[in-house]
Structure formats: C-alpha cells, structure tokens
Length: 630
Image (cartoon, rainbow, N blue to C red; front, side):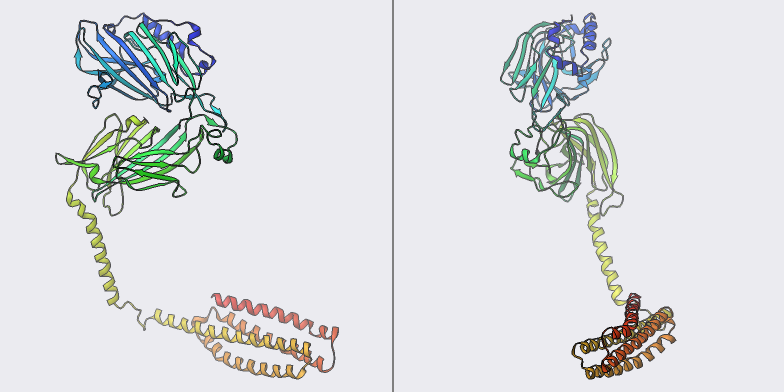
C-alpha cells in the first residue's frame, strides 16, 4: 500500500536536514499503516486537486476532494489527515459541499468537523472527521472543498539577515495527498509571492509557471502515500504576529459601541542582525529594508468614528483613514519600521453606531460582532475578546462559530453600583478566517437606563442644597472663644514683628547713607558735608530707637511672642552694635581727614572696625531672613 520514493527525491538539497519534520519516523509510521487493512478502503478519492497559497505568512491549503463510496454500506463521515507536527500549526479547518464548476453548495454553511482518534492509528497522525449532511450510498459520490490554514508554517532560512538582505523561507508539505483513502488521480499547485525560487523538490511531472509550482497529476496512489516536497523561496510580505491582542467591546444603550484593541506585535520573519541605518532605509527602502514592514491596514466596520491610534508615549499621528459606505480603512504606521524580531505595542480605538450591531430576539437583546482582528493577514498567537455589557444585564448566553474558552468577570466603571458584567472569550492561533461574527445574548430592563441620569440629577441636587445651606449658615468662629482670641493675638504679634522689621530696614538704609558719605569724603575731601550727613543719621537713628521701644515692650508682654521674642531682641541688639561701630568708624575717618592723616595709617586705624562692621551686617541680615521665614 505504501509507495516508497527514491532517496534522491526525498532530499532535494541539504536544507531538508534543518526541517522540523522527522521524515524517518513518519515514513516508518506510514509503512506500518500500509500493512494494515481497515474499513476505510471502501471510500475512494477519485480526484484530488490541492492548491497551497504561500503569498502571505499564512499557508492556506485548499483541497477539492471527489469522494466515492465503493463499498456496500452507507458512509456518513470523511476523515481528513495531517501529520502531528503539521497539525500543531493548524489554525483553521473548514469543509463544505461543492456542486461543481467552482461553486460551493451552501457555501454559507460549513460541515461539522471534529477531531477523532480511529483505532489502530498511530499518534503521529492527527485525524478530523467531516460529517456529511446525508449518508453517501453505494456507488454515490460528492465533492468536498476543504480549507486548512496553517500559521508559523514558513521557516526563515537563513534565520538571521542584515538590513540589505532579502528574506528567504522554507516550506514543506507532501506532493501526494496524505489520506487514509486510496486516490485515483491527484495534483498539487504551490502558489508563491514571487517567481524567484532558490530551490524546490523536483519530482515526476513537476512544472513551473511563473510563481506557481505544479506537481502531478499522479495516478493510483495508495492510502497514506507521502512524497515530501520542500520549497525555498523569497518573500517580503509582512510577517506581523500579534503575540497578544486584547479587544474590549463596550456596549452603551445610549447609542454607542466603543471598541478598544491593545496590540503586542512582533515581526515573525528572519531576525535582523547588524546595525540599522535609517538613512539607507529612507533612501532605498526596497533594497535596504525589503524584509521590514512600515504599515498595517485595519479594515474597520462602516460608519466607524472617533478613531484614535496611540501607544505608551501618546498619540501617533502617522495614520490615515479612508471610508466609504461598505468599510472604513485605517492605515497604521508604527513609529519605526519593523524588521525581523523587532516588536511594537499600540492601541487603536473607535466607536460604532449601536443600531448596527445590537438587535432583539425573543425578548432578549444580542450583540452580533466580529471575533478576530480587523488588521489584514495578522496572525494572533493569543486573543482575548471582552464584551462589556451594561450594568444590570443578566441571563447571558454566548454563541460562537468555533470553540473558544469562555469566562465572565465584572468591570467597575463610572456611576456603577455593582459593576458591569464582562464576557471573556479566549483563543490561541487566530487567523483572518476566524474573523466571523459571534453573538452575546442577554436580558436588560430598560428602566435600568434611568439609573445613571438619576444619579447625576441627585448628585447635582444635593450639591446645590449643600451650597444653599453653606451660604445661609454662619460658620464663623465665636469672637469670645479661646481659639479666636489666640488667633487675634498672633495677628497682632505678627503685625508688630513686621513693624520691627521695617524699622530695622530703615536703620540699615541710614547706615548705607553714612557709608556713602564716607565714600564722597574720600572722593571730594568735603569734611563739612560728611559731618552734616552724620548729624542727619544720628537724628534718624534716635527716632527709630524711640519707635522700637513700645514695640519691644508689647512683644515682651505677649504670650504668643514667646518663641520669636529672643530672635527679635537679638536682632535689635545686633543693629545697635552695628550703629555704634559705624559711628566710631565715621568719627575716626573724619578726624583723620581734619588732621590730614591718610594713607596706610588711616587704613590701619579703621581696619578692625571695618571687619567687625562686615560681620555684624551679615548677622543682622541672617536674623531678618530667619524672622521672615517664621
């Protein structure tokens, strides 16, 4: 039953050694199966046409199977087979009846498919059963269209490239359709994104037409026939992989559906090595960055509005929106081009009209919304879809077109009492084919919509009442209370201290005038003018001293000034000492000028006094700053 191929055809080049498929193990398994007799031999695949689309990072395998029942009993299911290693990357599997000439019968309805484990089959083969709508009688036939979508099926080779290198990938499959049934005639077409092919497996009846490689037709193939083929080719399509995507769909019965999508995207192609030159990339992007992608396209629902695109830094302005009655297209440009292994995180959000997605049926409301991402050809390793229902929703049911992990949680938002119920749907290995509509059914009392307006009205009402009460109630402190008297006494102390500071500042200003008269004396030699300035300063300083006495007496008698009084007294004492030093210095200099004494002798007489004056000035200024802070 098993058809063994020549060794040179099994290994077209040395690149096969690096592939993940363990061919020896697989061949051994298939050889054992070829010696086994099973009831599956009653079904014959009279014709198999397979097409493998590798024009993007997602491998899509479309198989048209003409199935015949050659046995006496009816057949109600057909088995689809994949090697275990290949099945790990199987993201989507769909089968539908085909009525011929390329038309799929009841294309809107796919046939039920489930994973099965037939007896006597090894674990290295994974089987799926397609249930037929009606049993296939003896001699009857039908045509099935089977679509299998694989992620991470293209392996970069080499695994690391520089900015200037092109991206080459490897893909492996079988030229013979792997099936538990015998195949009368079959063919395979591999469609590549470009006509540049580094290498490929050459079997019998192999032809190349542009970017297509055609294998076959091959006739009279036994069950579990396997002929491995490897294609090494160039592709610079975006390998955008969302390692995690969280979609939050929040329903507001006030007429809006808010969608927020958080992306964590990595370039899943050949990893970039070496330095990156933005100058080279900007000048020759097709030569110095052909493997990178600079933008993504998200096809949003029609009538989407309030669209934003941002990341952790803030809003990103490098995006454009085009809309028409059928769709809204969002062009997303990250802050930097993404090369292999590079990653980026961002968030897009938009609002949609509620009436386009929320409907009523049998006393329940239900949301009808798409499951996957709107970004074109995006592979999602882990997808979380959260549907936030209005507060008060109950009796929640979920309908999905494929199995997902379901859960429920609660979200507390503004003006909520108990929180809003949240339906959580999780799925791994998601592709654009999963972008189908799912439904969330729930019951909701329309009177609950009045809860939030009632809270707002009540809040404003009590706010106004509180304001009215506030302006009509005397909340002032009694003038006879101890706290009020203490406050008044402290205010008097503070005012007194400010007067003391003002007088001290006036004294300092008078000191400065005395210093200025000495400078004029040294310049003009006018002794009489200097004496006049001295008399004026003496008069002012006596007046200031008289003004300070009652102020100090008040502070000494006030209990509120206990802590600050020592500093005030020290300030007054330092200022008086400074006066005395300045007057002594002034008298000495004037006396020297009258006796015609100058030069070094004059400097020697006033040097000690001048040094003390400088120190006292600094101490007075420090005390003023200290009192000012208090």
